Structures are given as C-alpha cells and as structure tokens.
Image (tube, rainbow, N blue to C red):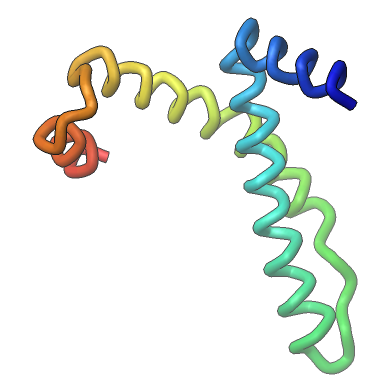
Length: 96
C-alpha cells in the first residue's frame, strides 16, 4: 500500500496538470452522479435511470476543459501574487 501511495504522489508531482484533471474530473462527475441519484432514484416517482450521456459530458468538461483552465488560473494567481500573507490571500480570494 505504501508503494502505491508513493507512486501516486510521484505521478502528481511529475504530472500536475494530468493529476489535477483526474481529481477534478472525478469530483465533477461524482457530484453530478450523487445529484442524479438523489433526484432520479429517491425523489421521483417512479424512479428514473441515471442520465449517462450527461455524466459523460461532465467527465469531458471536468477533466479536459475546466481542469486546465483552473490549473492555469491558479498558477497565474500564485505567480502574480506570491506569498501567504493575509493581504495577499484576500487579493487572491477577491479575484477568484
């Protein structure tokens, strides 16, 4: 298990954009899947099937579109406003 975690950490260090895409895409699809599960399976009568084409669109958008945009945005923010002082953090938050 420790070897797997080290390899996982090396992947994220060596390929931060790809790692960010995998994490963000997974979270994006997971959020849509959980929302569909609640609204389609529990709150609708009769229960409906999960909308798989929508999940596929969320996977593509989260992994390949939003993730690189956000990755580069935060990279620019950190380069333009370096540091962790309260004043810098507030600037970053307001811009974000």
